[in-house]
Amino acid sequence: MAKILCVLYDDPIDGYPHDYPRDTIPTISTYPGGQTAPTPSGIDFTPGQLLGSVSGELGLRKYLEGAGHTLVVTSDKDGPDSEFERELVDADVVISQPFWPAYLTAERIGMAPKLKLAVTAGIGSDHVDLEAAAAHGITVAEVTYSNSISVSEHVLMMILALVRNYIPSYGWVVRGGWNIADCAQRSYDLEGMAVGTVAAGRIGLAVLRRLKPFGVDLHYTDRHRLAADLESELGLTFHESTESMVPFCDVVTINAPLYPGTEGLFDDKLIGTMKRGAFLVNTARGKICNTDAVVRGLESGQLAGYAGDVWFPQPAPGDHPWRTMPHHGMTPHISGTSLSAQTRYAAGTREILECFFEGRPIRDEYLIVDGGHLAGTGAHSYSEGNTTAGSEEAARFNR
Ligand code: NDP
Figure 1: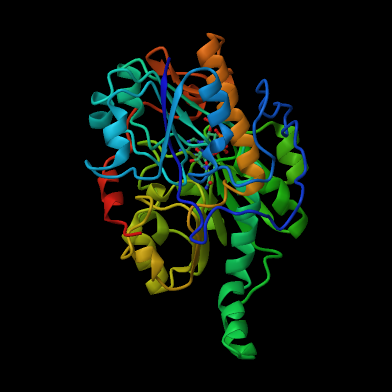
Figure 2: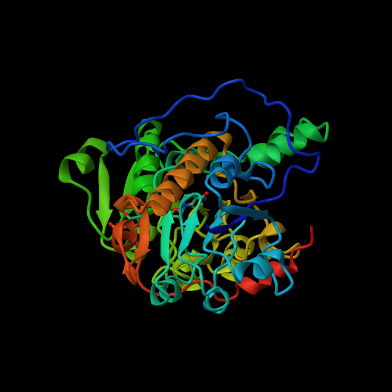
C-alpha cells in the first residue's frame, strides 16, 4: 500500500466554507481541439466545492483510504522543518498544485527513495526538478487543459484592467471619491492596439480567440507555427521570436512554460525594446520575467502596467517588490484555481492515480516525465533542465 503526500494551500482564514455563491457550475466534458475532460471511474466531491485547500483534500481521501492507501495532506511545505520534508522520506506519491508549489528540488528528491510519481494538480511542473526526476525514474504528470481556459479568462481580465486603469478607479470609489480625471489620466481603449502572445499553445491560442472580437491587431510567436487557415481566421501576424515580436506590441501576454530557455526572458534588454508605455501580462510563471527589471520598467515608464498571478518564489515573501511596484495589477496565483478549474484538476488527479495504481498507462497528454525522459506533453513543450533554484526563499513567507 502506498503513502500519498498531498500539499495544498491553506483553508480560507474564516474556515472551510459551508456554502457557496452559486449552486452549480457548468459541466465541461470536452476541451477545444477535442481532448476530453478527466475521466476517473468516479468522484467523491460535489463540483463547485473548494477542493484545492487542505480541508478539500482534492476530494481524494475516500478513494485512497478505501483502497488501503495512506493520505497525508499538509500546507506546511517550505524549509527543512516542514511537514512536507518530514513526510517525504517514505512517500510513494507527491501531489502539489502550482499555486502553492511543493518545490521538489534534487535535494528533496534525494530524500525520497520510494517516490515514483509526482502529480501536478493543475498545469506547469516547473516546481519539480525535471532532470532529477528523470534521473530517479520518477514519473511527472499534470492535468493538461484542466485550467487553460480559466487562465485565458484571467489574461483578458488583466489586459482590460491595466489598459482601462480599472483597479485605481475602483480604489477611488471605495475611498468615497469621484475623481474622474485621476482615473482617466491613465485609461485607454484596447481597440486598435497591437497585442502579442509569447506562445500560442492551449492558453495562448484561447487568449487570441478571445481577443479577436476586441478589434485588435493580433501577433504571436511560438516554437511551432499555427496552421495557415487558423492564422488567417484570427488575422494573426507570426514572429520568429519574442525579441522580434515585442517592439510591435502595445500589450504582451506571456503564455509559455518555464524551463531554462524561458527563465529570465523578460530582462532589462528585452523590456527596453518594447514600445514606451507597453503593458505586460504574465500568467505563465514569475521566473520568465526578471523581478527587478519589471520594477525598473514600471518606475521609468517604459512599462505602463504589469499584471499577472505568478511569482517567484511562491508564496511571495511580504517584501517581494512586485507587491509595491507602481501600476501593477497582481493577484496571488489564482487564475487556474477557480472553483470551476478545481473540479477538473481534482478529477484529473484522481484519473492519474487510478491509472498509476491499476497499472494502466497515464494519458500521453498528461505526461511530463516518464521512463527517465521528458515524455508526452513534456517532450513537446518543455526542455531538459531545472528551474527550482532559489525556491528555498519561499520559507520567508509569514502567514
Ligand atoms: P501548452 O503546452 O499548451 O502551450 C505552451 C506553448 O508554449 C507551446 O505552444 C510551446 O510551443 C510554447 N513555447 C515553448 N517555449 C516557447 C518559447 N520559448 N517561445 C514561444 N513559445 C514557446 O501549455 P498551456 O498553454 O496549457 O500552459 C502554458 C503555461 O502556462 C504552463 O506551462 C504554465 O506554466 C502556465 N499556466 C499557468 C497557470 C496559472 O494558474 N497561472 C495555469 C496553467 C498554466 P511548442 O509546443 O509549439 O513547441
